[in-house]
Length: 358
Image (cartoon, rainbow, N blue to C red; front, side, top):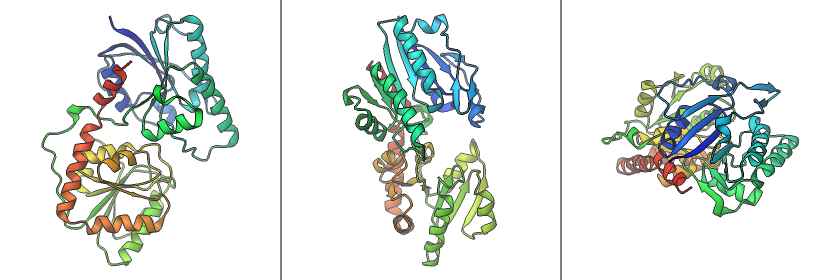
């Protein structure tokens, strides 16, 4: 008989949906969504079959604090394993549900799911103290911690002294093994093509990237930059009329595949980024990543022999760009094949095997 697992999550996302479907093969799984995608400006909707049970809460907000029904349904009280989500708007409810479970059922395994690696994003002191206090309440009762990157695991071990023996490192990935084509082969453009896809914002450092590229261009190097996405810097970038920039707008589906097939290198210059799933997506197509040292996905990029530069450093980024432009075809193909190989290893089935150790 399958054990009963309840996972509290912030809101539905397509890549977590794939993981939950996998988990339902070994657990009688219920996923409780505490928020809705539209609450965070997301456009995701459940569009594929679900093999797990979904409970959608009706949240209400006090400022940024997300609150839900304080009473647990009967089917949720019968869990053998409960996974709480370390998400700032939901932390108060996580503490409340934790102690509800503690008094309802003694033989219960409690797990905390976290993706935070301590980037902070300029949080106020009050917010940091509030988050730390609630986390410590939860960690006192936790049997295990699911950390979605090595950096994340190190942060929780050092900051909260949570035993490394109880920390499980999972891979950030949106892909199943079946999502990878067997015949993926990367070709190189005659003139090097860089790509950026994501929010055109200050934190993503898109304007900084373009300024550094202008300097590289002035040194006599030829290349192109394809930009995809939307955000507050869109108008400023388009007004610049840079001859090396082509703007693709917001893209998804087959258009996104076309984008990755059109570029040689993906560049993610963020000042702070917990991960960056676009790196996983690009490497699947043999695109070589160039990321700042403050991007969580640098763990994956390092394995694939990608380029890492110092966040906010013009000189460091310039050197990485020039190395990429000057790369010989043989070296490019070797690294592109490595990217495809590593991306296949970063799959959701790996995470399932880790969770099965429960």
